[in-house]
Image (cartoon, rainbow, N blue to C red; front, side, top):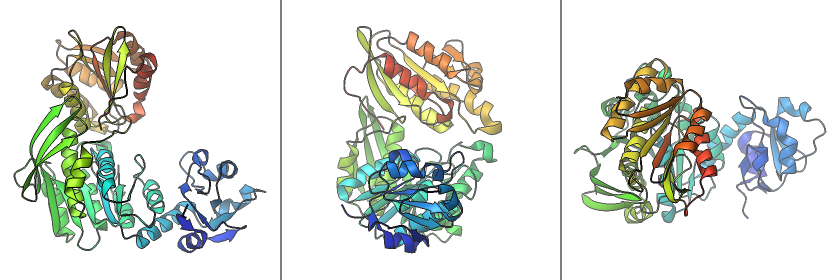
Length: 478
């Protein structure tokens, strides 16, 4: 196996000093001592809750080829005998290594941000570009001050396409990250009410998201959602930064990558789009109009980095989901089956509405089957929380969802807004609703679970999976 980094290059990039007999190189980088791969380097990052230096011995026991540690922590490592690179600060050294990885790479780089859909779009890009070359992309949602430099530092030199997710919940968070990534294409999926507790309004969120344009390489492209109300704000931000290549996607007639029509099916959908003057029929391996909207962004970004469009379209027909983002399970209940749609990873008002629409499109199994929305609190809504939760009543009504089970104190605002025709169960505690769900689902039901990750509604998903056996191979949707 070739090396991700030679030790000589690590030392030079991180401005480190060697201790012990360093290996010739490393095969990978880990910040989790429990998940070390043999031959990898362990970076002992100090986080908010734990300090990686406390787990250096475990990292060596699990196969680490060398440790990257801070000078100030060296005495605390005591008699630990292991090859080390000692640096001023481990996170700062990883940032320097990430920048070195970007400097040595000839890959086409795409950076993705947005209030909704950035992880899904990133994963779709990973999948869609893979047939066209070697793709390196962020793991999970590694999109913050340590996730972005870690992802960069892990990027092999022989990469054709790099896809990076960049997140934020405060102003000035994206700016330093995108200046490391230096993308050829910056995608903003949409602006929506997320992290509203930290912002005055959507325009402030748009201004913070626009920071992603500041890191573009010379001649780089920005890809924006033409249907979003903040499109004008973002377009002006691009003009102020001197970004001349601004492109758009959406239903709007002026969009460069335009949705003509979308048709949903239980297992996927078909998108008809106008791209470069061509009307294209694009099969999608996952259901949901929001997936089609993300697919437009994927098609746009892939076009802008020069990927073969027909190859990308073929790949979109075989999408696979991430856990908690629309994954479908068919579970045996009594003598029949139910469908579980797991949307429990995260939530804000826009993604809630998309998930509710997905539930509305789902086919119930037998007569008497119900479409059940299990919804947990949306976090970080701040003073907007009451309105944000209550506003979901309209989306549920539009989709004809008349069975709603709610968890968390903020969901009382939705409960109060729902009409009497809706069957509502509300529990303050997630575990109480978990018990209700396990006892109450029946054959023919389609159950969709959506919440902010921090609420713990993933436990409801797990309880249903543990209680009711999978009827067949998992059906998935991104």
